[in-house]
Length: 129
Image (tube, rainbow, N blue to C red; front, side):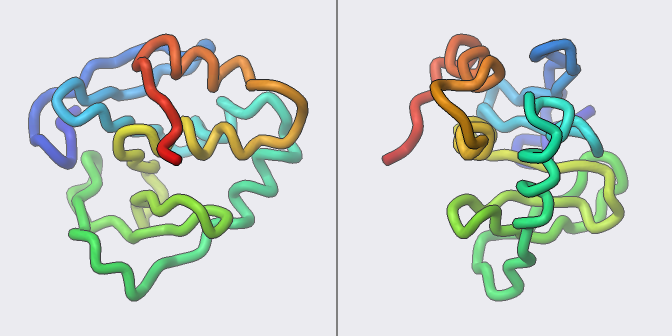
């Protein structure tokens, strides 16, 4: 699969038993449909997260194309904090550098989640403050 940003092939990495597509040039991550929910340790938290997605009609960021269907993706605001790209046909989600970590750290509970820790270790990401 090619990166929707760099148009270069992405690497397939395993994160907590789930294969994710990673662009080493942009540090972006593609999650196929259902993979974000699978990364969450708490099913209720995953459902709440998905319910918080709101379409960002007025967003001025350049729309990128889905790496599966090649249609322009929509901008989606998550819990009023992070804007990501979502395929309107349901193929998956694109996270620019650091965005997936920001989203996973929204999970309620004490301490850092296992997947957030893996992301930090794998990509040496820090939350943008």
